[in-house]
Length: 428
Image (cartoon, rainbow, N blue to C red; front, side, top):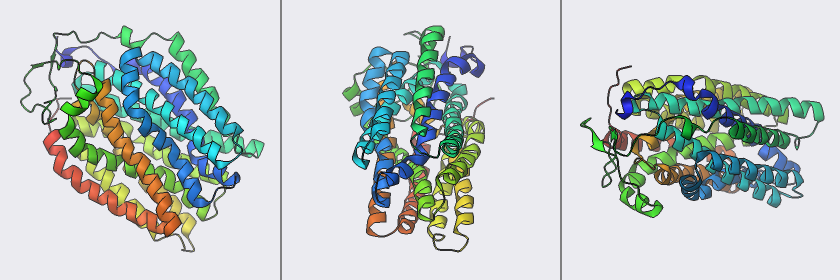
């Protein structure tokens, strides 16, 4: 039976695949908007607060490639349980942090754990979801992360209102990690529940190991033999360098948005509860579009999600750059935050879908680690660039420059997406 012919339903994986991810992302969403605020409370300047907020992306970057090795060795469920335990330790470091330096270390460890958790779930969906459902399934996974990032800030806002302190939001992450670990232990292991494609099963989306391009003929080809980590990276160097650069720019724009909005709120004097509330509402818009993004990619092709998302993110940052000193800067901030969430939501699941398209079978984890590294390199570099430009010039200049980079990224994706991920109409 071919990969596309295997019976599959998103409902069949919803509980075991999505619920632990939802809990983990709620905890992450609870702390991310407040990291600059907590850093400022510990005495950090605006630029240093931006660097500390970027530590979560830097941690993910450092953790991406080794997480591919870890997942391929110990399995998806064990990797996620270990990641949850590491997160609990990291959050305790954040709670006890006496200064911005220790806080940054704790946030960096959170990023490491997030890389392992996210790649483990990505590898499962890549292995067990048939191609015809792939974009919708991975966009749904992206939507689950966004749901957590939507709920988390509201929890933060409520807790800050009740307690009057920002440190309490870290306890949300601890409770969520404990809950995710319990679910992973009690629920069936999805890698054993769902049938693994056999060694002789044909794969219709196998990747050319020389060019990295998906086969455009649609004919069945044998599954790619299992390769080691560094052999996988070398054999897919073409796609990782070219389309991976585009993935890095997507990650850069998403991370810039995540860091820019809290920093902008601090710089124009919006309170911590209001910041969490505004970003939470924006997260709701982002979350609402996840399935639409998957439908677009499955029906029309990946490029129809990628280009509108990148153009919107670039344009939104450019617009924000001109609003800082306006009398209506708060209203402009709210409007641009909602627009950026709309642009980001249209691209929900894009990077995971492209990674799954290009990953070899039956062991995609090493390639996915390298692929996620390219995206997370942009995610880690962009906030650091924002912090540096802010220190040298201003936050407005940083926003404008990142907007220009986003538009350049759209041009790059327009060139390489048709080459490596050509449009194949789906019968839905």
